[in-house]
Amino acid sequence: MLTFIIYKSILVLIVFLISLGVAAYATYGERKVAAFMQDRIGPDRAGPFGIFQPLADGLKMFMKEEIIPTVSNKFLFILGPSLAMLTALMAGVVVPWGGKLAIGDHYYPLQITDINIGILYVFGVVSFGVYGIMIGGWASNNKYSLLGALRASSQMISYEIAMGLAIVALVMKTGTLSLGEMVAQQGTGGWWNIVYQPLGFLIFLICAFAETNRAPFDLPECETELVGGYHTEYSSMKLGFYLFAEYINIFISSAVISTLYFGGFNLPFQSHIPLDGNWLVIAQTAFFFGKVIFFIFFFMWVRWTIPRFRYDQLMNLGWKILIPLAIFNILATGVLMYALGKV
Amino acid sequence: MQLTNRKKVVVKKEMSLAEKLYLPAITNGMVITMKHFFKKGATVRYPEVKREISETYRGQHVLKRDEQGAERCTACGLCAVACPAEAITMEAAERKKGEETLYREEKYAAVYEINMLRCIFCGLCEEACPKEAIFLTDRIVPTDLKRGEFVYGKDKLVEDINHRIDLSGRQTKEVLEFKKDKTKAHNQTWADKQKLLKENKHH
Image (cartoon, rainbow over all chains, first blue to last red; front, side, top):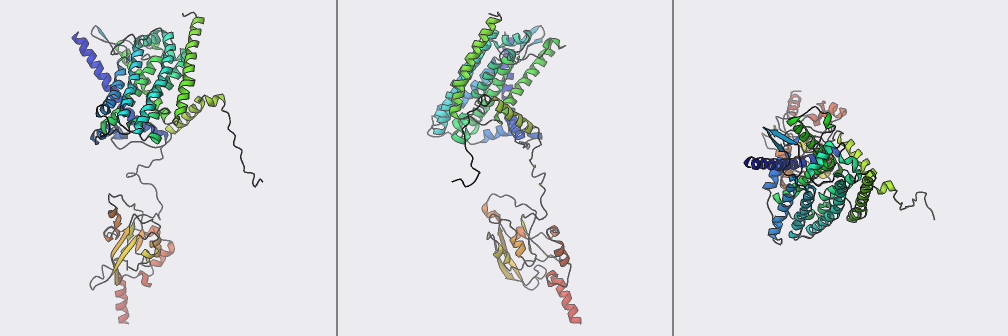
């Protein structure tokens, strides 16, 4: 029992630290990617190639003056960013980061907990994340913040439906809600889910952009119209928490996309690779992180390519295109499964 | 009545299916950004690498000394008159006995100030100067924290006697040739003049 608790605590700590580390370096990566795409160099002063830039940025955030507006609701004002950070970090619990490590004669799975409704848990936590933004924006007692919060909540609610419907089709195919089992199926059952669910993947990807408030769906923080959106009034590390939570969300979204549609930690043509035991587990975890980093890069690539949607376009896309498309995807999946005799 | 053939009828074109899907356009855009990702940046890493500038670049001014190290400026005020931004002010003073090695002419600028925030670096002061005293150089005016610090006095403008600034690159061949002619008063230093006076007395 004690070893179990120690092992879980260590795993939790590692996932926590990796989430923070990846998020910190995602800020650096974002600046570099943006710079390269705009024919610039990007941060290169703090250390070789500027690799200490995240530390400098973090230090800056901590040293800044902390301002809490007198007209704000102080309790909720502080609760907002805390909630955003909390929900961002919680979603990493069900993601399977790798196979089972064998130490002695015990097996230690590299997944904190494989609850049998894993994907629903992710959904629950992600939709909880909108409260951080909503509460923060409302408690600021500022019109721009309120508009940003309003946009954030309506956007998240609209896109969660399409996202959920995209997942329904996937669940029909896999027959399980557990992320661990989904990965296992993709490892043994041949193809990755992207082959069976290309349309579902596309819908899920677009909704993931909207859920993480990334361009082209970054209306809640839309600098050109709303100053800073929901975090206009925030300063110091409270602002840092909001920005950080966004990057953690990107990291988790990338991990979930890889898990659901790109075989999780499975290597391509895994059965032909002459590796076994712990080496295979390590290779799998490394490959999984490769996939995750590719998707983080993809998020940035899209951000620095396309402009922001207009608010009515956003709502049109969500309600009139993505939701019908997701429903069509469910029907098509059902018909195909029936035709192929899988039901 | 039609005046030219340049009119263009604006039609609100219905978008095709491919355009409505957005995705082909987005893919094209992403291909373009990816091409730029591997391009070399246009950035110049400034303090370490300096951009190539022309020999006649118009940067921070210098008040030249002559070969003997005496200030060339005679406080005639032509630069201040020529200055379109009214950035130059000066106060003249008369040279006292024993200051001949400090100032080239009998009159000199006791105070000479250029407001670098007003200056537009047009180089008209350089053109106006009859004594080859003021030149613009390839140095860049550094930043500062207070507006007052940008009013440069003689301490910053007069060239350091130990670190002369070579401006021969700014001058045309004809000017450089002319400057070698020591019989012209313009090119004579105070020492040259003394020498000439002595020689004249001898004759």
